[in-house]
Amino acid sequence: MSTETPTTENNENAPQNSPQNAAPALEAAIREKLTGEAQKNALNFVAHALTSGLTLDARYASNSAYLFNYFEESVFLLGITPFWNVAAWNVYLGIEDHVVSNGDYDGFPVDEALREFARANAKTCEVALGGSCGCGKQPGRCVSVFGKKIENNCASHVLWFVEPGAETLENIYKLAEVWKSCLADAKGKKGDAKACR
Image 1 (spheres, rainbow, N blue to C red):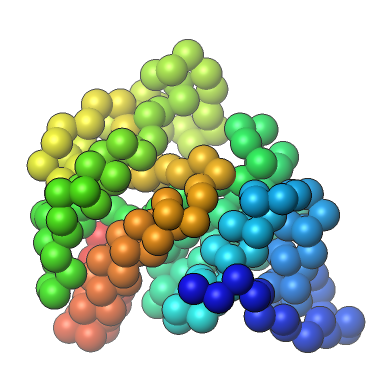
Image 2: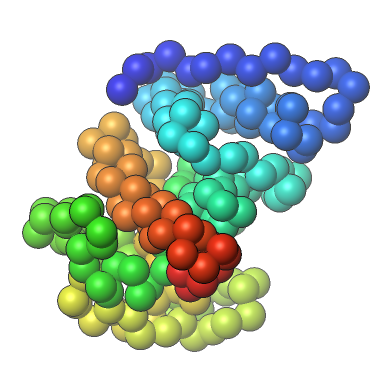
């Protein structure tokens, strides 16, 4: 994967969270708030997301959170500091628990290493850990991640990645393709990607 980030021209007449300015505004925020490998990996993540058919939704930019959608359904949520004050940057994979519980999906075989990777990054409910969360769905849920039962999983995000490096990002992209395939399949068969949920 290229380490160069695509540049997007900024439209000075559009608001910062508009489609025209969302990408350059996000890239600018990453350059301002992150340094070193964290900055490089976050910029590479954005570049990959934007060149793999995802659209950037910056409606939560004021909270340092950015959605990457496919057929108007969330694939990634990118949070950069000070989002929840947990790390310099985080990636939440919007994949639904029934997709990972099904295992392979339409031509996307998932090997055991990728299964273990997903299980190891299942997000635990913050309330179950003694913290707090504003999702209103506490105290988490029980899900199956590629056949393994996970207790107290976050009700909003099945998988969570803290400051992912290059190797971790490659696995995240593989899991995202499974979710995108589900969304595209549902959109094609039923006319609504939400049918994948």
